[in-house]
Image (cartoon, rainbow, N blue to C red; front, side, top):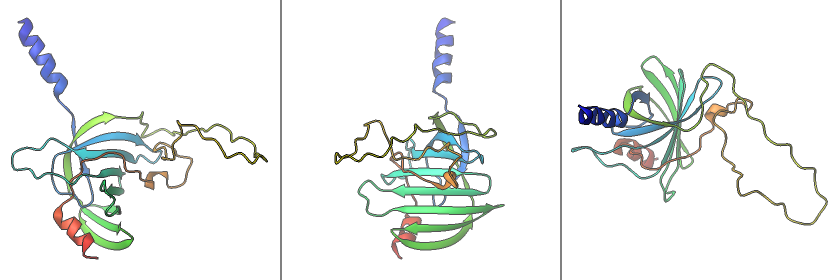
Amino acid sequence: MRSLSLTFAVFAGSVLAQTSLYIPGLDNQPIIADIIGVDGQGRTTWALHQGPLTDGADGGLPGTATLVEGANDAAFTYVPPGGEFTMGTECSLSGDLAICSATVSGQVVTETETASRILVQAGTTAAPSSPTGQTSTTSPPSPPPSNSNNPAQTSKNTSSAPNPTNTNTPNSGNTLVPLLTGLFISAATVTMFLQI
């Protein structure tokens, strides 16, 4: 009986939650989505990466991806590791339709598509989230200006990446930062953007 309990505990610990997300331009495929944070307007920032492939599943394009999704909007960023191109897509959601504006390497494309949701594995929560409450961040005071000719010093623990839970900045939910690798974008989507 003890081995049965141990087997059940191991199996139960390995089960991941699933959720569905609208990810602009993505085909149905194995994706793991980690929550980075939730802003004051209830938009969730997700770090996306390729999930385990199964028989018959296509491999993905390496790269980085971030999704910010709310009830009425979604924004997606993808950059391959070599930086061959950058893609940023912002969509307004209305019922089953998504009206999207994508910028690929400086070229803008507008498209209306069905807002099909993809079942994804919900991974880890990287930051506390507060979908209904106000969240804010504080930063240390800036040092007074220096009249010295010495170059400014910076801490190795600083980052220029925006905080996804900062609600004191206008449009903070629309600021996207590539986070993880292993995303698969459909060949049709990439072809559409490369034809520009």
